Amino acid sequence: MLKKKTINIVLDSAQHTWKKRPSEIRGYQRTYYITTEDGDYLRLDYSLKEKRVRLYMEIDSEGGNAYYSVITNGKITAERSVSTGRNFGFSDKFRERADIFASIPNREALKLINRNYGIQRGKSAPPEKEKPKTEKEKLIEETKQRYFKREFYPSEGADEERGRKLFKRVTLLDLIDFLIGVLISGSVFLFFKYSYMAMGATAAFFGIIIGFVDMFFRDRSPIFAKVVFFLFVGAASYIYGYFF
Image 1 (tube, one colour):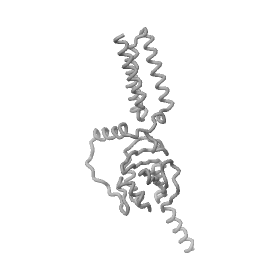
Image 2: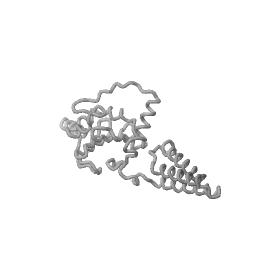
Image 3: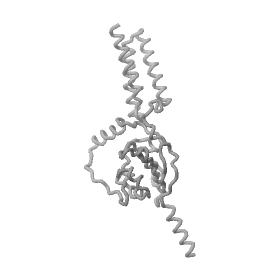
Image 4: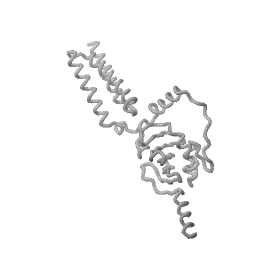
């Protein structure tokens, strides 16, 4: 009986140690993963060549909600909720598990983290004392992080390709927006008896509106090429109609 109990203790201890394997995510070399005593699944993928590390976690107490963070050249370049698609605002969740991430048996991988979220070898993550921010400051900071960063819309499993090719971010919904804008502008052009000024004003207005719709109603980063297209065509059409 004692022997059986000892075996179970050993198995439980092994279950909560970091395991490693080659990473299946493109752009990363190896993966460390663990299931904690609380039932959380934590994972770290890293690339020494690209100087990039990806932290991932599924929180059992939240029903398996998943979050990940990408750190490139020592700076946080992406922070995202896989479940909701929301960008940034989850630092506390990573800090709460910093001591577990810090126990990864790989100094090079920990070095890539660069002490972000308080993760450093041999130390837990003490909560940082920051000056409380007002609601306005929080809104401004989140807006900057969300809409004015280099990687606008990171995709799961392909963080290294974010922002490199615009067409990869274009969806069927964007094509539908484009067709709707063209149809509305064309209809106004015909309704006002071939008025280039009316068509131009409509196209420019549609470009602005569709950008706000993407940001505030669809909760996604806007495709600026789509917005600029309607603004440029609208301005050109209005100027042409005004002078000719």
